[in-house]
Image (tube, rainbow, N blue to C red; front, side, top):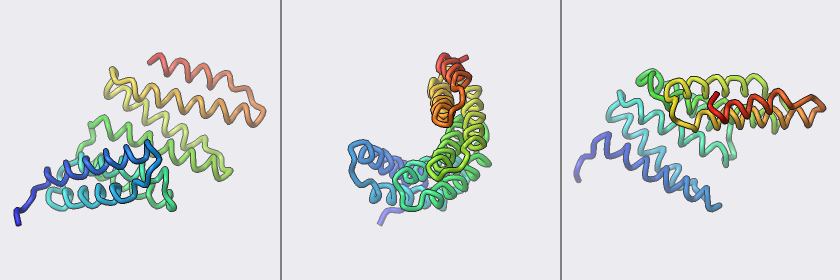
Amino acid sequence: GKEHDADYYLRRGLAHMVWADYQDLVGRDSSGHRGQATAAYHEAGRLDDGLGIVWLNLCNNYLHQAMRSEDPDGDLERAREALSRGRKLDPNNFLTHLYGGDLYSQLAELDQRRGRDPTDNRRQAIERYGQASKASPSDPLPYNSISVEYLDEAEAARAHGRDPRDALAAAAAAARGA
């Protein structure tokens, strides 16, 4: 059969990841396409270990998988490892900061669900999203993500009898891109 290159597997991984994202959106089981995306990204990385985007996409795939996983800790650790490889290969890529924020955001969410204090992971998420906003100032996604983190902080403050107004003000400022 025809030998495929890393770019082929990168695109194959992306196709399966997009398909899995759609399945998540409509409430279907995405594990088959997540697994195929993971396998394709690993093959792309094996064929060309210098492509940072392969590892960044793999990180994103694991982040999405962790949201519906029986083993979110394992998926988030695999996301962290893929992000680390991607960052080493492509340190200036906007996605290294954005996905770093997503990783810490999910860790904060897990902390909260488990009755632990999510503050440190939430602060790390906000810091990473802030780096993403500096790397790509015109992209609204980092600002929106920062705003969501502050809204989560405000909700937690209110739930624990603390004043949420500072966090709400920070959420509004982030949403304006300030």
